Every structure is written in C-alpha cells, then in structure tokens.
Image (cartoon, rainbow, N blue to C red; front, side):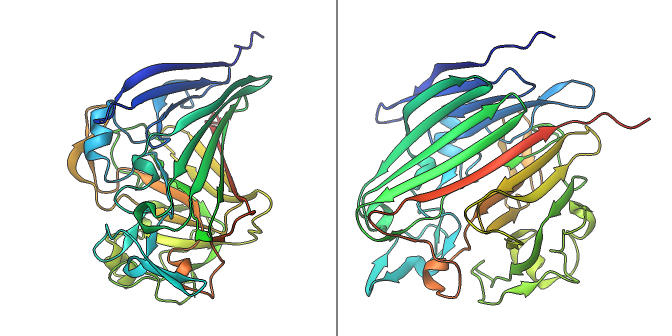
Length: 364
C-alpha cells in the first residue's frame, strides 16, 4: 500500500488593516484528513474529512476570506480564545488583593478575553515540522501587560499536530511575568455533515459529564453544581442533540439552546481523558474527543441568525454547528470553590485536547 508523505505548506492569506501579513497553513499527515490553520487568531479554518463513502467535506464552520474573519467573526469561528475563554462576571476579578477591571464586551461582562481577545490577534509561527507520522505547526502570541485589563505580560503558544491516524491534537501553553488568570480554548464549530449543511440537531452527542453549571439570565454561573439527571444536559448516553433542545427547561430558555459548562467525570488535568463523542448518522462521520481539561462548554450556535455566509456561500442559522470548548469553568476567578485558573511567574499553563475523526462503514 502506498502511503502519502506528510506535507506542510503555507500561502499568503491577506493583511490586516495595519499591514500585518496573515498566512494560511495546510497540514496533511498523509492520512484521510487535511487541516488549514490561519495565523490570524490561530484559527482552524478548515478540516476536510471523508464520509463513509469516501467523499470529502469540510466539517467546521468558517469563512473563505480574511476580510470576513476581520469584520464578521463575532462567533469566534475556529479561533483560540483567551486570555480567558468564556465569561468573567462584571468584567472584573480580584487576585492577591488587587482588583482588575477588564474589557466588557458581553453586556457588563467579559467574554473570551474581551473585544480584542486572542482570536483577533495575529499569531507568529515559531515552528513547523514534518514528523515520521504527521505534521505540526506551533504559533505564539505575546500578550502585553494590561491587555484587555488582564495583568501580566503573557506568552501563549498553540501547537497543532495532525497525525496519519486522523487525529488532531491541540496543545496550549502559557507563561506570565505577573500573577494572572488564564483559560484558553479552541472555538471550533463542528458540522459533521459538512460545512453549510444545515442543522446539527440530528447529530448524536455523548459527554462523560454527570454535573453541569446552571447560569443566570446573563449566562453567568449561579454557583450551583447541579446533577444532569433528569435534565436536557444528560448526554451520558448517546443522545440526538435535537431530542430535548426545545424542552421547556428554564436553562435552555435562558441560553436559547445549549450554552452550558459540563463538568467532566474523571478529569485530572494531567492526562488525557475521553470526554466526548459526536456522530452524524447520515454521513457516518464520527468525532471522538479526549482532553486534560476539567470541563467542556457545549454551545449549539444559538446566536447564528442567518446574517453570516460561510465558506460554502450558505447562510449560517441557529443550530447549524456545535462548539465543544474544552476549558476551565466560566467565572472561576470570582469563584474560589471552582478549580483555580491562576497562573504565577515560574509556572506553566498547559492544556491538551485530541480530536479523532473517522467514518466507519455501515454494517451489512
């Protein structure tokens, strides 16, 4: 059997308004997948995967031009979000007795690091390697002290590693020169039927989570750590996403769908733990996810309203993708009872998530 050699190639993707060049990197490990990464926002722009018949399709939401990402990427399609993924209540927190006021970009709250978070910055390539069984690309962003109100000069790095077994690993690391808080996450929206194919309600989701965080009307955790038993948030057995999406549950009403943090069972922050499976019965594509993170934000793209056209030219509407954001709990800097997101000088923030894509043939 002939096996294709791994390849890693870059091409210009445009320039930001201030003239910074943006590149598009294509990762091909010689397997069935190809992945495209932008240096703008460290964005996963494209993941092309075959269905059970071998037909390839892009399985993530995104745009085809830099201009769209610059002007229209409010949903953070494919970006590395930070310095703090998810929400910090009232755009402020206190650390070591010092109160830090953050940029408020979600009403009075801070979301995904503020209006100029990591998903809107040009990251710089620090390494690109062909490996014996794959390829890797490492990008870096140097975040200045007080950027969006966060203390400390922080150096963040992301490494994308695509292997021939059709696994994509995302490693996130960061170091700081002052005490700060860090919570980085990849904000890919999945649509296993193919980008622009419509609703993900028929996708089958399973999540290894027995508890979740209820939220208030502003999507801030109430402080309760609630069991998923008897709620629409119980995905411990494979469940069609649309099965309970319209249940008259107050939490679904508050979020206009799923936008909740599920606390993963068995997460230990030191080793990869199986967390999620997602399957599209029509195409046969299946995603398995492992992570070192303690939780996952499940977001059913509730605010897509048909005003954005994706890479296929089709309009994105509510529920046309699902984000599975591995991360720490929202508002942890203000919740001492939750796992800490504090990073101090001399420490290293480290996080890893692995996505495995396949399309098993139907049993006869």
